[in-house]
Amino acid sequence: MKVLIASDIHGSAYWADRLMAAIEREDPHKVVLLGDLLYHGPRNDLPRDYAPKHVIGLLNDLTATGRVLAVRGNCEAEVDQMVLDFPCMADSAQLVDEAGRTLFFTHGHVFGAGLHNSVDRVPALPDGSALVFGHTHIKVNEACAQREGLWLFNPGSVSIPKDGTHSYGIYEDGAFRHVVLEEE
Image 1 (tube, rainbow, N blue to C red):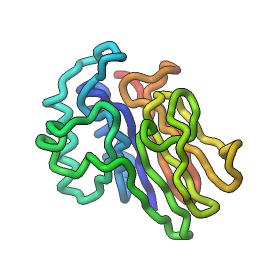
Image 2: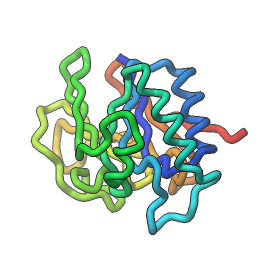
Image 3: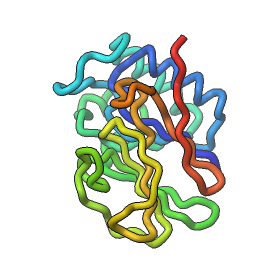
């Protein structure tokens, strides 16, 4: 199972276009969107080529593949669900991989690992699980220091990264990795 994980697009047509090209190249079984898809939020500057209507079209085109799984970010609102063709208002979602490992997906403002301004509220998960979150715009790929047997992964941000590198994540063969999106 190959899962592409993206977070914090924040309505950037420029970076959403690059993400769609990456999805086509990667050809994942699932595309997991960790929220903050359309709106930039009051704390962020407008991202490059801010055009939420363009991003809506790109994301809705993904629904035909049946591969989209999405959770709500702190910038999502009911109107976002009205324009997107896939459910996006759940606080969390889970997948279980071929080896039985639970991947718990969330944005980071309701459930999180307490890193880099994410809430410190880890749900009860089986040992060996992974907590996969966005929200902070900071890449993470490490064992949880506070809870043995829990892996933490944050793909960083597609459009407004805190470290300057626009990115998404891949989960494949039981391991997570970051992929940097290049500018053209």
